[in-house]
Length: 604
Image (cartoon, rainbow, N blue to C red):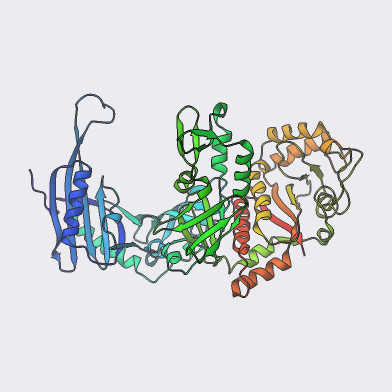
């Protein structure tokens, strides 16, 4: 076997950086090297160095190279073997472990108690001292209502001035520094790379030292401050944060069941004898209905854990070292089940594996989502931004119903919505009487009202407005707001629909009045021919402004502002306030991402 030396290694400036809590030991490193070789059935094992510090006194180098023989993926059946080499290089310097590797799994868990990740703020600002110009960003939203996780990649020259949105998480960055080096950072793994080709081990050590200096620099780049930052879950374990609200995003599960061919996938209950019976439809609807709401978390001093109680279910929340986990005792035997293939996985396993839930805390700026804990530092400092999109309407104070007043019902002879109903207030007090107003009441309702304004005035832009209305008793609770925001997010794509899509919608509107009454769908003057002509011109116009109005009679702006102040000052920590703020942030962020103006109209 050929003996390989450190000087034979020709590697790239590409490594993962961990903070060293304690120095590694030779015994540990040898055991890890042995385990890696055995796990991959490695051959030609070369342990090049184990904590070798002959190059530099305070730099300890450990290195392993081995080979693996396996069939080529494109010739699996014939006994032909290809040889692939793997290497692992561990460098301990300046209280940091630098890991360079090829064909080797993550080694973080191989050294329990010895390593910890560098904070997001340190890793993201590695190049802050070198006049960084951001050329590529990969981001994702941290919305509490995850109607599909919104990932996007932005490329360009000098993205430092780009508006990344209110609620974005930076996943990866490409940064050009003043010496024209192109660097990349993958934030959730702390992997840093500089494009420089293959280099000698001594050059790699020099590069690693420069990176560690950058990681520990106190300089911060203002551009990165707008992102939500990943933080350690230890903050919950240490009691610095208390979970106070949870939302289970089970729309993915509902979609799997509803879209399954010939109803061959459903929720089944496993009996004591091992047989499976389908959960009755009424029970399934009740399950999704109860878990669709935002839920308040209570601390149970007896079990020293966090619990949620719904009408029929209890949820236990466990805080592990690297994630949150939930268990639902009443659903231990509930499985996602295929008629053809049997049980797929338990409902509890599905929720925890997919991590389809978000948790908010007694500090508004924190949220657990996408399997990680995030900090949005500026959320409480920018509350004026929330207040600026909230407009008040006095007439909402008199509302006693959404479509009809309490104690009555819509009559077939009605030609308009009753006074003091929410839909009547929209038509007579909120809509500005310009253009066309339509009451949308079809099976695929996009909004309660949709208005179109085709302006010929060069100073006034054409408009498409969606009005989504919700009535209820006075509250700043999050559940009602969750419903109305969920509808808004679901229909963001429709407000940007094509001429063909709106033509189909208009054809449906023409066919009938509202809910078998004499209330016409077209609530403004004019006729459908003019509506069709104007809508086509509005959609074709690149200057058209699109807005979504959430019209809610249950929310008071003044009460909301007061309760936010009380929460932030600690005088009255109502548990639903963080959820409500994150719901609003989801709405604002999704609208802005789609070039739509978001508004909330509520009581004074």
